Image (cartoon, rainbow, N blue to C red; front, top):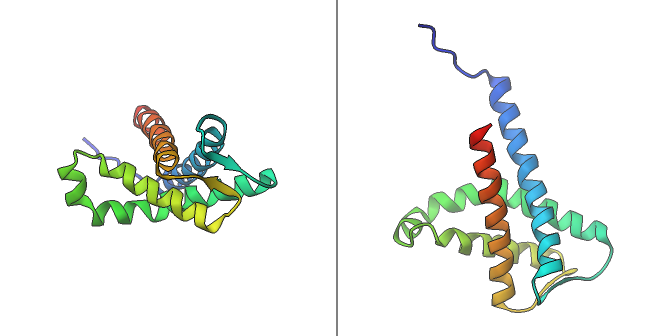
Length: 130
């Protein structure tokens, strides 16, 4: 039996697809949050919402795995619920960088992170199937 290992191209293609999915999740998550969650709004041109979503997606792709490694014991103790806190932190960082994204209070920030976590969960289940 011959064991087929993935090539470098396959691994790179997989990572690029994941990056694109994370960026789309960031854009879509912020857009859904501005439409559905009271206390979350957007002031300015739509291109800034798009840019904020791209930055959020990049943070989720590059920074979130590092934060997950650092906070592994907390995630174990909370049965994974601390991941929502990590998403809240990344959304908050995006809000700081882009003042056009307005999130009034902790509860709207929590629900925005919950929307993004839900989108990550849905796309994660899709990636495992395909």
